[in-house]
Image 1 (cartoon, rainbow, N blue to C red):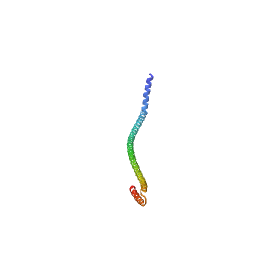
Image 2: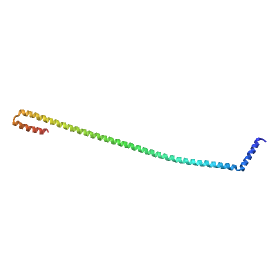
Image 3: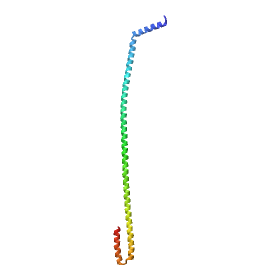
Image 4: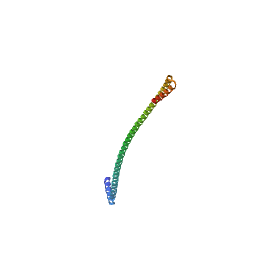
Length: 159
Protein backbone atom coordinates (compact mmCIF):
# COMPACT_ATOMS: atom_id res chain seq x y z
CA UNK A 1 0.00 0.00 0.00
CA UNK A 2 1.13 3.36 -0.79
CA UNK A 3 1.72 6.41 1.44
CA UNK A 4 -1.31 8.31 0.29
CA UNK A 5 -3.59 5.54 1.47
CA UNK A 6 -2.05 5.58 4.93
CA UNK A 7 -2.32 9.37 5.12
CA UNK A 8 -6.03 9.13 4.25
CA UNK A 9 -6.57 6.37 6.86
CA UNK A 10 -4.72 8.32 9.56
CA UNK A 11 -6.75 11.45 8.72
CA UNK A 12 -10.04 9.55 9.07
CA UNK A 13 -8.87 8.01 12.38
CA UNK A 14 -7.84 11.50 13.60
CA UNK A 15 -11.27 12.89 12.71
CA UNK A 16 -12.96 10.01 14.48
CA UNK A 17 -10.91 10.52 17.65
CA UNK A 18 -11.57 14.30 17.51
CA UNK A 19 -15.29 13.73 17.16
CA UNK A 20 -15.28 11.13 19.94
CA UNK A 21 -13.63 13.49 22.40
CA UNK A 22 -15.89 16.48 21.40
CA UNK A 23 -13.38 18.64 19.56
CA UNK A 24 -16.08 19.62 17.11
CA UNK A 25 -18.17 21.06 19.98
CA UNK A 26 -15.20 23.09 21.18
CA UNK A 27 -14.61 24.39 17.66
CA UNK A 28 -18.33 25.20 17.25
CA UNK A 29 -18.47 26.93 20.66
CA UNK A 30 -15.36 28.93 19.73
CA UNK A 31 -16.87 29.87 16.35
CA UNK A 32 -20.20 30.78 17.98
CA UNK A 33 -18.39 32.96 20.54
CA UNK A 34 -16.43 34.65 17.78
CA UNK A 35 -19.65 35.18 15.74
CA UNK A 36 -21.36 36.69 18.81
CA UNK A 37 -18.35 38.94 19.50
CA UNK A 38 -18.33 40.15 15.88
CA UNK A 39 -22.13 40.75 16.01
CA UNK A 40 -21.71 42.71 19.26
CA UNK A 41 -18.93 44.80 17.73
CA UNK A 42 -21.10 45.48 14.66
CA UNK A 43 -24.00 46.50 16.91
CA UNK A 44 -21.69 48.79 18.90
CA UNK A 45 -20.35 50.27 15.66
CA UNK A 46 -23.95 50.93 14.51
CA UNK A 47 -24.72 52.60 17.86
CA UNK A 48 -21.57 54.77 17.62
CA UNK A 49 -22.50 55.71 14.07
CA UNK A 50 -26.02 56.70 15.14
CA UNK A 51 -24.57 58.81 17.97
CA UNK A 52 -22.09 60.42 15.58
CA UNK A 53 -24.86 61.24 13.11
CA UNK A 54 -26.97 62.74 15.92
CA UNK A 55 -24.00 64.86 17.05
CA UNK A 56 -23.34 65.92 13.47
CA UNK A 57 -26.96 67.03 13.04
CA UNK A 58 -26.84 68.86 16.37
CA UNK A 59 -23.63 70.71 15.45
CA UNK A 60 -24.98 71.52 12.00
CA UNK A 61 -28.08 73.01 13.62
CA UNK A 62 -25.90 74.99 16.06
CA UNK A 63 -23.71 76.20 13.20
CA UNK A 64 -26.76 77.30 11.21
CA UNK A 65 -28.11 79.14 14.27
CA UNK A 66 -24.72 80.78 14.84
CA UNK A 67 -24.54 81.86 11.20
CA UNK A 68 -28.04 83.33 11.42
CA UNK A 69 -27.13 85.15 14.61
CA UNK A 70 -23.90 86.43 13.06
CA UNK A 71 -25.82 87.73 10.04
CA UNK A 72 -28.27 89.46 12.36
CA UNK A 73 -25.41 91.03 14.32
CA UNK A 74 -23.73 92.24 11.12
CA UNK A 75 -27.03 93.64 9.83
CA UNK A 76 -27.67 95.44 13.12
CA UNK A 77 -24.12 96.78 13.15
CA UNK A 78 -24.51 98.12 9.60
CA UNK A 79 -27.83 99.76 10.48
CA UNK A 80 -26.33 101.28 13.63
CA UNK A 81 -23.32 102.58 11.70
CA UNK A 82 -25.65 104.09 9.09
CA UNK A 83 -27.74 105.71 11.81
CA UNK A 84 -24.64 107.09 13.55
CA UNK A 85 -23.30 108.44 10.24
CA UNK A 86 -26.63 110.14 9.50
CA UNK A 87 -26.72 111.61 13.02
CA UNK A 88 -23.15 112.89 12.65
CA UNK A 89 -24.01 114.42 9.28
CA UNK A 90 -27.10 116.09 10.75
CA UNK A 91 -25.11 117.44 13.70
CA UNK A 92 -22.38 118.71 11.38
CA UNK A 93 -24.98 120.52 9.25
CA UNK A 94 -26.54 122.04 12.40
CA UNK A 95 -23.09 123.12 13.58
CA UNK A 96 -22.32 124.74 10.22
CA UNK A 97 -25.69 126.53 10.20
CA UNK A 98 -25.14 127.83 13.76
CA UNK A 99 -21.60 128.98 12.97
CA UNK A 100 -22.75 130.67 9.77
CA UNK A 101 -25.54 132.46 11.64
CA UNK A 102 -23.13 133.54 14.37
CA UNK A 103 -20.64 134.82 11.79
CA UNK A 104 -23.40 136.71 9.95
CA UNK A 105 -24.57 138.23 13.24
CA UNK A 106 -21.02 139.36 14.05
CA UNK A 107 -20.66 140.84 10.56
CA UNK A 108 -23.99 142.69 10.91
CA UNK A 109 -22.95 143.96 14.35
CA UNK A 110 -19.59 145.13 13.00
CA UNK A 111 -21.31 146.87 10.07
CA UNK A 112 -23.75 148.62 12.43
CA UNK A 113 -20.90 149.65 14.71
CA UNK A 114 -18.87 150.95 11.78
CA UNK A 115 -21.88 152.88 10.45
CA UNK A 116 -22.45 154.39 13.89
CA UNK A 117 -18.78 155.35 14.15
CA UNK A 118 -18.90 156.96 10.68
CA UNK A 119 -22.06 158.88 11.61
CA UNK A 120 -20.48 160.03 14.86
CA UNK A 121 -17.31 161.11 13.06
CA UNK A 122 -19.38 162.93 10.39
CA UNK A 123 -21.44 164.63 13.06
CA UNK A 124 -18.32 165.69 14.90
CA UNK A 125 -16.80 167.04 11.68
CA UNK A 126 -20.03 168.88 10.82
CA UNK A 127 -20.15 170.38 14.27
CA UNK A 128 -16.57 171.63 14.03
CA UNK A 129 -17.13 173.01 10.55
CA UNK A 130 -20.33 174.78 11.49
CA UNK A 131 -18.63 176.10 14.64
CA UNK A 132 -15.81 177.55 12.58
CA UNK A 133 -18.15 179.08 9.97
CA UNK A 134 -20.48 180.55 12.54
CA UNK A 135 -17.63 182.03 14.59
CA UNK A 136 -16.41 183.89 11.59
CA UNK A 137 -19.83 184.98 10.36
CA UNK A 138 -21.52 185.93 13.61
CA UNK A 139 -19.81 187.58 16.51
CA UNK A 140 -20.75 188.49 20.03
CA UNK A 141 -23.56 187.31 22.26
CA UNK A 142 -25.87 186.69 19.47
CA UNK A 143 -23.31 184.42 17.84
CA UNK A 144 -22.92 182.41 20.99
CA UNK A 145 -26.71 181.86 21.32
CA UNK A 146 -27.10 180.85 17.67
CA UNK A 147 -24.08 178.60 17.94
CA UNK A 148 -25.41 176.79 21.02
CA UNK A 149 -28.89 176.31 19.44
CA UNK A 150 -27.41 175.06 16.18
CA UNK A 151 -25.02 172.78 17.96
CA UNK A 152 -27.85 171.20 19.96
CA UNK A 153 -29.95 170.75 16.81
CA UNK A 154 -27.11 169.09 14.87
CA UNK A 155 -26.32 166.78 17.72
CA UNK A 156 -29.93 165.69 18.10
CA UNK A 157 -30.33 165.03 14.37
CA UNK A 158 -27.09 163.15 13.84
CA UNK A 159 -27.28 160.94 16.88
